[in-house]
Image 1 (cartoon, rainbow, N blue to C red):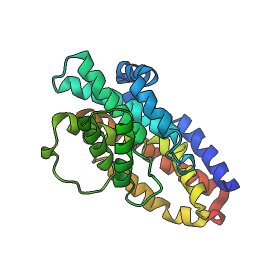
Image 2 (image 1 turned 120 degrees about the vertical axis):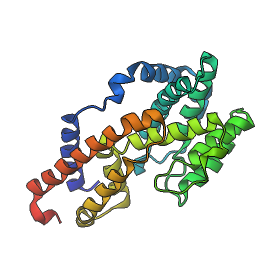
Image 3 (image 1 turned 135 degrees about the vertical axis):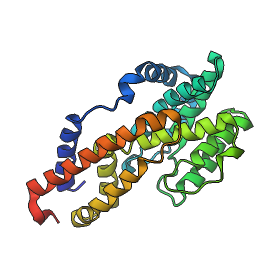
Image 4 (image 1 turned 90 degrees about the vertical axis):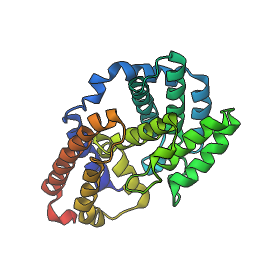
Length: 256
């Protein structure tokens, strides 16, 4: 990592530390804790986790830390969404959580490749089959991975089963929660360092990049995602503005 990016990252992390915490973490704490425990104890999830650790590119801002957060939060979301949809049996809700967590772990396994969601879905299918998942479950997880990219047109969701639709929506929302504060603690800096982007190019493209983050605000899919997701983005936008001002204050226009 270029020294200047290291300095900017540390400034950004200090700003994030002082920013508000999204309400999702307090209002959904029960479901998040439930998902965390399930993530650590479920044998099927553990099998996928072990394989994913060998495949993820840690240097691209979407490594194991990112995938674990997406998995746990997708698990919490789908438990809540499943209850709202009328599922009451614990075994059924746990099964949905298992699939959501596996989707979260697997969604970025081909992150460095073109059409990474489509390719990732194919690779994920092989892994899930090796781990003994049913063809129905494999299809549902792969469909969620295939549809997790932002600003892409996908076939109408009416063709999906209820379980698959829940899975698609919750994976997307948990992944896009990361476009809030997490962008400025890890993701942006890891990607910049890996791609060796000149600082001048980074600053020149900064306003356009932030505008892209703002567009995510209107794309959340699940009921819970639409309720909590916009706040992640709003907090991220506030952090982005403060980071930009801090860069210019510390380095002046010479940084450009």
